[in-house]
Image 1 (cartoon, rainbow, N blue to C red):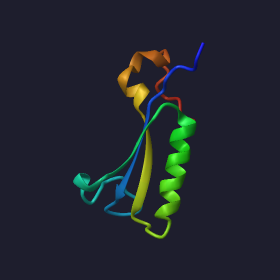
Image 2: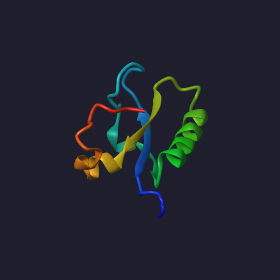
Image 3: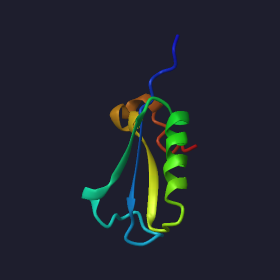
Image 4: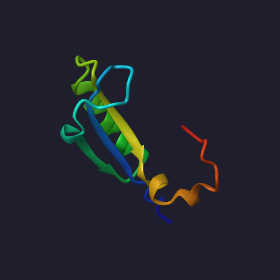
Length: 82
């Protein structure tokens, strides 16, 4: 049986401050893409992060879309991070 599809969104943008998660202009967010698993999302995240390493305000994030789309699937374990 193939792996369950676990969609991950990778996106980034310019933050108001390096220690904040508020974006300067949400309309200008860079959507790297949506990936079928964490590994491919992480590779894309690492590539995007490496490309903007000189800009402290530029930050990329990985969103676990599968958790948002099906919140009950985790069996109530909402505090789990990896």
